[in-house]
Length: 467
Image 1 (tube, rainbow, N blue to C red):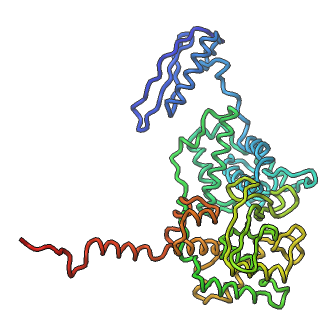
Image 2 (image 1 turned 90 degrees about the vertical axis):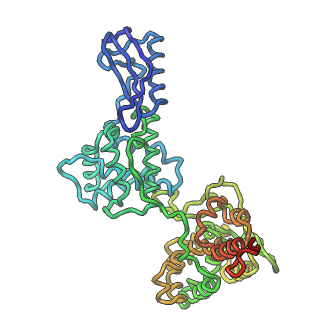
Image 3 (image 1 turned 180 degrees about the vertical axis):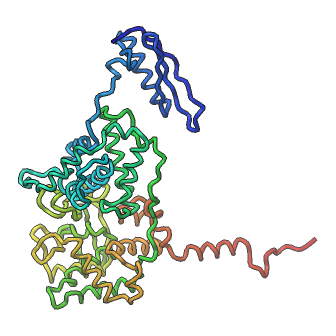
């Protein structure tokens, strides 16, 4: 039944709870109604809607107390159904690695937002169904018949999935957040992975609010803290110049009698150390992007990266994505000066190994894009040749990316202006200094000398005469 007998009061602040809230009160046909909001802005918005509907002459439902314009749309039947709708919206515009992250997050949350229903598939089958099928938009060429056990698992998820509206309950929202702290096999996820998943989940919730499926983002009502992320580079991973040279030499001996596998990659790793390039930037480097004079410093003009993504996520049938520089527009170029030593290494590499059809300097034996798994295995073998057993067991240069860490920290230690280092590295100055603060040697000793000079030494602290 509808009524236009409506009275609306001013917002009242509720001070009785530990966290203040705001209450909107109104009457419809003499029936008192109220609704509490976490912030005054939300309460104002809801009250404004009531006032607007009343002035427009809308009838208010005597049961719910709401006009048609404020009646919540019926939510998607389940979390699973809405998650698939989100993927359909996001997939066409997302980068391959973003698609992978989205799939990983939605699979983790879906696995925990299910009711206790008979017929639950095994963990292995459920993981395959969610990661491999549920949240992947295949191209027509990739479509294939779903295996029966996968189809059965997805049918079970469709029936057991909790209603999306349940996420308005803090306990259910916390259940979803706890789910992103684990991998699908139940083992703990890394702190950086949890942070990334939380960002995806928050975006899903905002999309639900945008479509009117939820009144507000339910994550805001849960006091949940993600694991802390180490923002600073561990100084133990940073090579000194001698160690870096020894590792580059050791690379030339990896696979020496088997297609010169390591020698083909010496220049790749040299770009990371002497030029501070990210691995994906080095992999995408082309001959036409390099200025390599006979003498003196050279210049690399970076504008393409080739990160490993996987055929499932690129949508092109290729394992590697082809994109612009990190955090920059696709056409933006970053020019990096390189020392004569790297100029010589790159010139020698081109003379011995040539280049790919598209100008790439680094390629596998078949001419394809060099994969991260391939150069990571080669790096591990070089570490075993160049480092002591104790160093091999330590974090020292544990990954190829640590060559970039060594480059940037050594430039800063050498006194290069942080603004120039940040420009060459493709970082902001704030990010650069916060990440490499622990890798700057000698600062404590310098500070001690300055304090000592300020205070004076013990033999002549005062210099003044007693009266």
